[in-house]
Image (cartoon, rainbow over all chains, first blue to last red; front, side, top):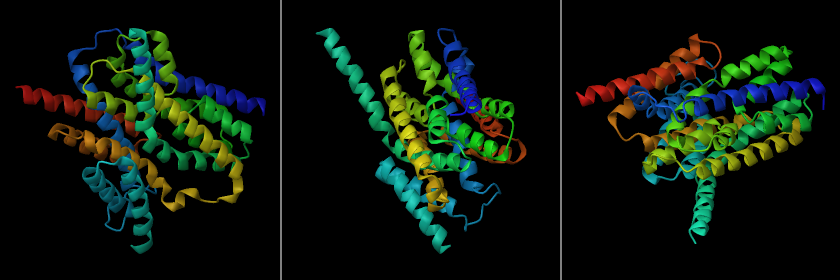
Length: 106
Length: 238
C-alpha cells in the first residue's frame, strides 16, 4: 500500500460521496416546486437513455448507425425479449450472446 | 407483536432489494473483473485495487482513474474528474428524495454511500412501480449491499487474475451494461410521453457525447429529457 494511492482513493471517495449525498439530503423535507416535482418522474428514463444510447450507437467512440453495428441488433433482441419474456436476467444473457454471434457473422 | 411484524417486513424488503438486483449484480461482474485486471496492469496492488472499490464504489470513476494513472496524469486532476463524472448522482439523489422525505437523516447518509447507477435504477423503478409515496429504505439498502458485495468480489478476482486475461470486454461483456439498463427501463415505458423522453434523451446524449468532454452528456441529456417530459405533461393538462 502506497500512501499517495491511499490519499488518492480517499479523496475520490469523498468527492463521490458528496455528489451522492448532497441533493438527496438537501432537497429532503423541503417543498419541491410542482414543476420540479413533475420533472423528477422523467429523470430515471432520461438518465438510463443517456447511459444506453452512446454505448449502442457509438460503441467504439464513433457514431455507427449502420445495420452492421452488432450493438443495435443485440439491443433490438434484448428489447423484444424483455417485452415478451418479462425476464430481465434471461434477456441480458440473450442480449450478450446475440452480440457475440452478430459480431461473428456480420 | 407489532414490532415483530415490522422487523419481518424490513427483512422482506431488504431481501426483495437483493433479489430484484440480481440481474444487475450479474451485469456488474464483468466490469468489476475488467476493472481489477486493468488496475493490476496499471501496477496497482491487489489491496489498492480492492480499497478503491471499497471506498469509491463507482465503476466509471474507477475506470477513468485507472486509465489516468497508467497515463501518468496528476492526482489532483483525477480527483476533479471523479467529481465531474459523478455529477449525475446529483440528479439521481434529487429524483429519489421525494420517496425519503420522512426518513431520518442518518438513513440518507447511509443510503447515499451506496447510490450507484444500478442501485438507483433498480430502486427507483421499484418505487415507481409500486406507486408509493414513501419508499422503503430497506429495499434500497438490500440492493446496495448486493451490488457492493458483487463489485468487491469481482474487483478482487480481477486483480488476482491480473495479466492472464487480456481483453475481457471482447467477449461481448461490454454489452452487459446497456443490456441491464434496457431490461430495467423498457418495462417502465408505459406512456407516449415517457417513450418520447427516453428517445429524445438518448439522441441528445449521443449528440452531446461527441461535442462535450467527460460525462457531461449524461447531465445535458437528463435535463433536456426531464424538461421535455414536464412540458409534454403540462400540454396534456391543458
